[in-house]
Image 1 (tube, rainbow, N blue to C red):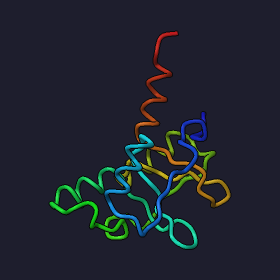
Image 2 (image 1 turned 45 degrees about the vertical axis):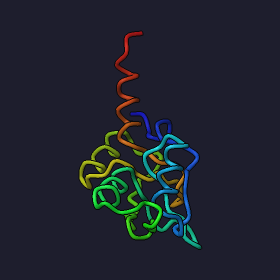
Image 3 (image 1 turned 180 degrees about the horizontal axis):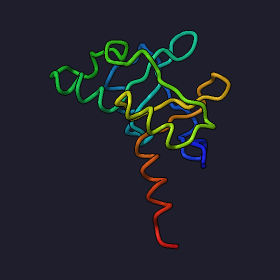
Image 4 (image 1 turned 45 degrees about the horizontal axis):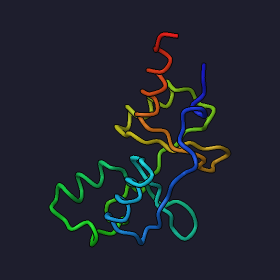
Length: 129
């Protein structure tokens, strides 16, 4: 069974918690990613996703450059070890209804796995050779 290490996105892209929603959206667009880890003074303090920006900022009619990330981020960062299987990661994502999962090695976050990463890998395996 293939581990998720080969499917995860590295390096981890992050932004400091003092940033606002507009800065986060711009960084996600520039890097072509769907989530960012939020850095505090002593490590990661949360995660923000495209869904957070759409539901909590745009959907509420807020002005993105006035919304601090700390007010829209999810504080608990769900993670799984990089040696886990795609199936284990998928089950965890379905159980918690999330699209992005932090990948760890010895309790350090070393990558991010998205639903898109899992689908892309599965589709590549199903292509004719």
